Length: 172
Image 1 (cartoon, rainbow, N blue to C red):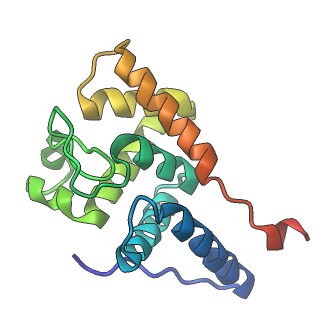
Image 2: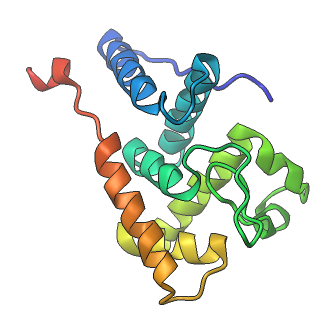
């Protein structure tokens, strides 16, 4: 459980914008994760992994809220694990085979973001189809299952709540 990646910025404006986003997101996450240190680590890791996978951070935050409500040790009925409800079968396909690594925050978030990126690419950029495939495949639900639509709808509603507009740069 290494510390989360710390971003580096070439421009001061980008660094300040990141810190403003971090402060605002930290406040929004407080009801889900009361511990400030843990919250900071989660937010930093989500930001890093979302950006690494080329995903919108609000999209990832909304997906996590819908899948696990930010519970690190969440386990779904089919055995999907962690923040991103990653199906353990993925560990043998794209990981080292050790399912316990999904309990490590950064590993769980990396797997989830890589899978979301995969489904987004497979869906040719259709975000709704990507989240639907993610939910079906990771939660082991059949296409058309009403639970899939409920989770997908919750993810998009949550994404809207996690959206962030930097007022300092919006004024320019």
